[in-house]
Image 1 (cartoon, helix red, strand yellow):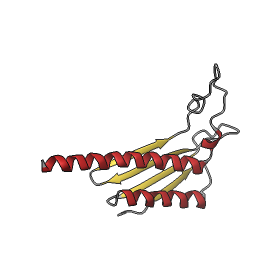
Image 2 (tube, rainbow, N blue to C red; image 1 turned 90 degrees about the horizontal axis):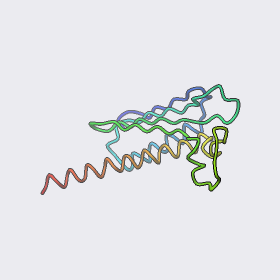
Image 3 (tube, rainbow, N blue to C red; image 1 turned 135 degrees about the vertical axis):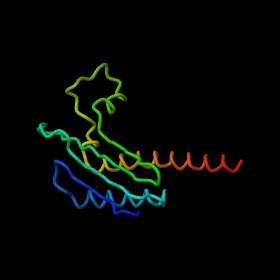
Image 4 (cartoon, rainbow, N blue to C red; image 1 turned 45 degrees about the vertical axis):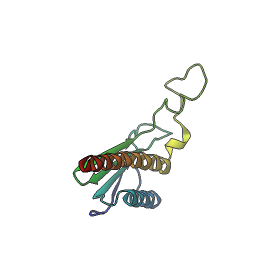
Length: 133
């Protein structure tokens, strides 16, 4: 990468383990797309008013030559409950426990970034093929 990976923690204590994981994942993305210019990661707890079950939000900005990719990862209340065959669920139901943890949120955000980066690569390959035909 032309610029070093920038990792910011907001409304939470900085964690060496989380920072190391984000740097490892950014290097993983660079192996997929070697022309990656930069990567900025924001890990935050958005709602400080909650007494328990603080959920982690991850925001990733990837700088590519000519464009930027932005990935926002937030755990949603109802995504985990869609698969349950219960009649109803309410606002007070808890979010999926795994998504509460920052490490899992980082993994999921970088997986989404990888899929979007793969889409960019596919589009660039299609454009390259169409110029030769």
